[in-house]
Length: 186
Length: 129
Image (cartoon, rainbow over all chains, first blue to last red; front, side):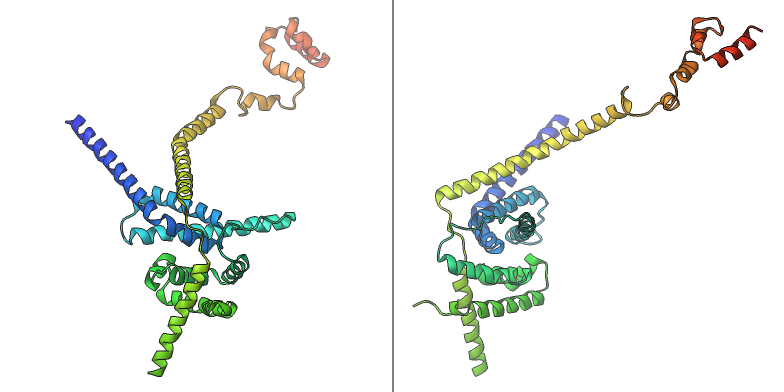
C-alpha cells in the first residue's frame, strides 16, 4: 500500500516536473523575441546586455514557476520580472560606470551591431536616458510594446493615473527633443 | 466637435511619433543561429543555477562539520583553563604547579632541585625539620 502511494507520488512529481518544463519551454518560445526587444529598449540599446537581462528573467521565471498562482496572466508576471531585471541591470551599470570613471577608464560603448543610423540611435538613446525611470518604463511599455495602461500599471505596481501622468510627461519631453522625427521621412 | 477632432488628430500624431521611435529603437531580430545561441546561453544559466542549488546542502553540511571540529578537536584555538595560568608565567612557576608530583614531596628529590634557593630553604625548614 505504502509502495503504491510512493509510486503514485513519484509519478505525480515527474508529471509536475514535465508539466513545468513544458510550460517553461512554451514561455521561452513565445516570449523570447519580445523579451529581448523590451530589455533592449529598457537597458538603453545594448543588444548583448538585453540578451543577458532576458535570459536572467527567464531563469528567475523558471525558478519561480511553481509559485506562480495565476493571479495575473503568465505574460504579465514574466514581464514584471523582466522590467525589474532591466532596472537592476541599469543600477549595476551605473555603479560600474562610476567605478570606471573613478579609476579613469571608460567602459566600452554599447550596441555596435544595432541596425539603422548610429547618430540617430544615439539621439534616441540620449532622449530616453534623460527621462525618469517611470517615464521611460511607461513610454516603452505602452507606446513601444503595446501594453495597455492597466497592464503597465500592473507591471510597474503603480496606479493607472500615475502611469498616465508619467506617460504624458515622457511624450512631451520626447516630442520636444526629437521633434524632427515626428514627420515620416518621404 | 472641433476640439474632439483636434484631440484625435493629436493622438494619431502621438501614435505615429511613438511608432516611428519604436521602429528606430529595437534590436536586430534573432537569426536561427542567434536564437540557438540565446537558448544555449539560457540553458547554461539554468544549469549553473541547478548546480548551485544542489551544492547548497553539501556546503551547509561541510560548514557545520568545520564549525564542530573547530570547537571540539584538540589543538583548536579554544583556550583551556590551565593555559590561562601558564600564560605569562616563568618556567619554574609552571614546573612548580605541574611537576610537584614528581618531587615526591621530598626536598631532596630531583624535582625540588629545580626550585630557587629561597624556596629550597623554606622546603628544608618545613620538611626536614
